[in-house]
Image (cartoon, rainbow, N blue to C red; front, side, top):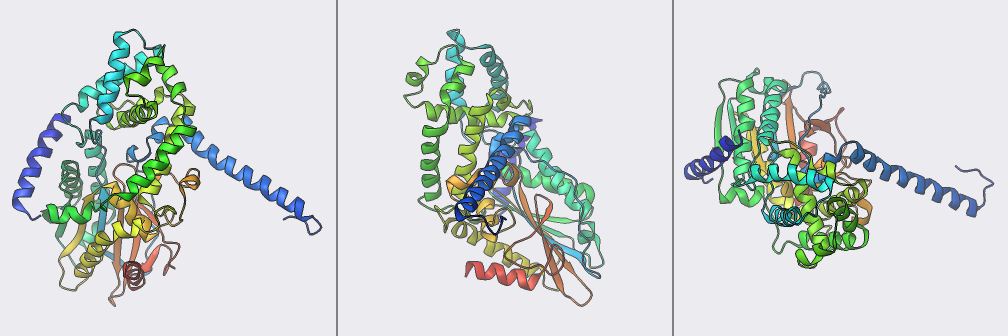
Length: 452
């Protein structure tokens, strides 16, 4: 399956590029006693929050992969629309599915260190087991860096299939619409994600017409980034400062190697960078055809520290961070303008468009949902405040997506609800009309004002 996907990715890129332009104290208590009670309460609350993610990681080490966690769908129930309203159009932006490492830097570092340790007899039993499974992952990834895995293809197929089943009326309702417009980043993993998504939709709904588009002009807003990439610089500095004071590379290395003095010289002097590369490589094991979670081999405390470093870094780099309060808006604005423009066209009476589907990357989706302010992304947090209050595996794992589902009644009134990872969600800053449903006029005004 992996080889087939690999061939498809390269061939499909060529064909599409050639054909297109492509979120009480008591009354008598003294002030001193009140403050003490408050401090105890806050301390207990923060400990409980910290325990939450530790417990999750203890029970499911793969969760510690952060934004490299696989897409997980759980059954959901739609809140009934207000009387008389029927779905007629959907707008979707989604991240590609599960992939291999996006570069060979991490893989090469792990291969060199563990191959040397094996040759010198320096692997512990845990190190031998890790290296055995890591070797299989490395072999599978060979020649496919950055490409979609079979798991990623299955994830996107499932999202498309469920869209067709869940909102079948959009595609074959009273006012039949048959055109599905699909726009993708030029990245092969996004292109194949687009085709697998529509494969799932096609298997549910027959007779639709699909328009596939990609190209540099579309990549510019689907994967927009600022130059210089201040988000990466600021968050990277924060992450490395955290690692140098909080992470436990010596404990991790002692788990895998019988001796550790040689590692610093072998990796060029910076054990924290190697620990980071080892952790990031281990994150993708669960995403491969082999499917082994390599993070299971990590001791709990080093694993938690690695997650804490990456989780907080990702928030600062791409969300509503206190360190970069303007970043999410600047990155999200080009994409959001496109989304609003496509919705406006689709809502015209003579439109034949049932769905606008866009396929891109986490580094654009994350600023988009942060700027929009969907629940769970509406707070502004600093690097130090993130862990225990926000979770990257939950919000921005592989295949993450946002969908705007539109409903209309016989009078022509339009409502819209927002789905994130296929679950109903709201915007705390904007009052809904009923349940999770917004008046489109209210939501549109909110979105337009946010980028004006």
